[in-house]
Length: 506
Image (cartoon, rainbow, N blue to C red; front, side, top):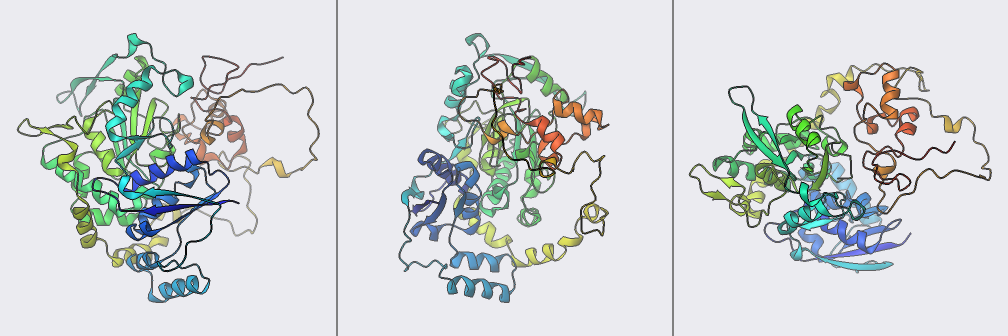
């Protein structure tokens, strides 16, 4: 394959995060075109990047289309192994191996030869989001409001929502509050943030952005800011170590105060596992056709993936997720408009509570310890009693259960027939551009009225136990019914209709 070299120069400026860099890399490489190609990062800027920052970018390879995003092993890689509790023998072995293989990067080595190269200057990276429908559609922070408002009236074929002018200022009343005495009525409109998720992928295992989110939350709480009641918040770290260093830094409590409680570890909202919206919010969004929004720190924001009622989905860094949760909307310019007011009625802007790089670095140095990794991962095999309680069979072959709705023996290897010419085939679908893997085979929630939902119902599965397509990939009977079943896919054979529909030719 072709290998594209991306030369990294400069240093990230104040206010920019590894997430902003990852979104910029994704946008740049999508425009360059790196599908079926390897991408290797090189240059002096690598010395300014921590390993978690590099991992954040490499992990976005599917989003920028490359087969792999590769950072060479160097001194920072070895230091990372030490920082995360690897033994001296393991660290020495890794270093000796990569040096012996000629794969260890040092500043005095000549750059490799590449099929082509491009350059990214870290000093030019700006605070950004990506969306509202694709991870490569990066928007600088100051333009998010304008981009969203333009999308409302833009044609669906151009990535918009096709709303008529009469619907642009539509509002829907909802009641929020824990009980009848505390309830108050508020109005939400297009752009109302109904999901704010610090969710998994490498963002939530990167101390710089996780500590940054905690520090921002702490400053917000100290200024008296709170998250509106209609925003569904969640925190799902990619590692149990994250919870430890947030607690050690005194940052877990302010995150909880703003509603960012730990909901679990691993894939959550990015995969459609955020659960339903509160009933009143869901009804208001559905009844009034509100273009509701989500801001999440995952890697993917494809249509219909996060929540079927949320049409605008933006990717952002964890601290930016907290900021938008406080604002309660994406229809806001966080550079020039305040997040809210403090206890004295004074406006609080994002710049007032955004933590500095030095604050973040000092907190990481104080709380990130190899002993934490050693302690937590020494118990990894016994840390989940539910997992350990799952029974297993001693057979070398998997005991297929014909009644399982999760795992079925796939039929495509039973009889591998020679391909024969296909004659007089009917057209199933005609699609436009930017058809994603999620359009072809969605991973999000399974609607009850979908073919897959009806199949599960026929098998005796209750609606609350449907899980989502991604969890049932081991069952071809679900996945075949889920093909082209994305609720936002648009088949040009049935214009004006969204979802897995086609024309039946008898």
